[in-house]
Image (tube, rainbow over all chains, first blue to last red; front, side, top):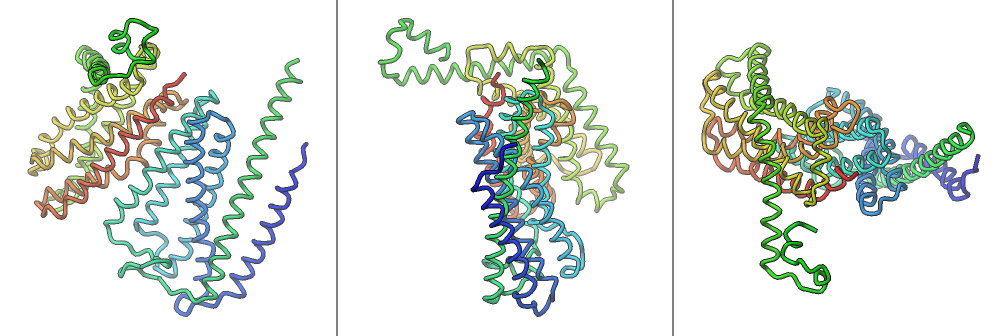
Length: 233
Length: 252
């Protein structure tokens, strides 16, 4: 088996170090929020996961366009790997949000635009995975996946605006919050530091996962080629 | 290269250097729409002879309306609240039936390959199929709207309502035709289409239902217009996207 490249090893170590620091900052450095208490610390994981989920699907959109333009199989692999990672973070976002919402809103779930849009986003990419599994021919699979990655991503903002005209209670911590939001708070500067550090860490974590996933995919393809060469003879 | 340009310029050596004049573009344009019309006419004739698509969509929609009637306790107040929702859910389910049928018919009988072999712009095939699907869905709507207004005793047939029905169905049919042409190539194809289509079609459903129920209670135009804008925006964006990517979907 080929060893992981030097850069990938450095990235792996860097990601682990960053994750440890971020976790320590969240639990020991960030101040306790006055109204909500410790449960507010979920915020430092919730928002970065949501961001990564979104970033991952954005990468899939870009990879889809690049695949349709160039036809290079590498872009197809990037799109697929990114959807897999994005789905993990999307589920993490929804679960961590629910855990926070239970004490903050006194309910696990509400049909708020952000929650609903995010769930629809997750369903679009579950459909993306099912489409890939349902198509056998690799060329066609790559083309269909690219097209669906584009169509799906474009529909997300429209979905968001369509649901937004119902009243929202999701707090907006960065930027202006709507007057009906519940559970919002103003960040103090240590909070802001921890938050942006956590955001950065999660972004690095995403690229680390992506790099490792792409390597895994390359290795799997090599195994297929070797199998075809040695077992068929 | 389309048929028209080769007709206007029979001398092959002259094709590249000459600048295309306005009339050439006009010929290309009319030729394009003649192709669209041919695909549409083909679907229409096939349907006129078999009548299987429209009849199944119609019976299915009536059944859905009946089932909603039993599933929800529809008294006078509830009827006004949920009527728009019931109407659009019915239309969307029936639409899925039609979309699936329209594309799997092409694939099973091998006529899709024939269409793709024709020396025409691929997007013209898309517009032909999408217009056909739109037409069938509108025909079904044209029957269920009056039936619905009688059964539910609601004034559904208003000019604005018809515009909402048109805009909503355009959006649904344009995305639906694109996704159905992918779904027919997958293993579990009949199940695949709703899974691909419903999450992407949420804005159409939301806007159409909201606009319809606002029209039902005769709300002010300020309340209805954002939904109109949303529907128009969705239609324009997705017709454009489908136009750009359809080539890659049918490429062999």
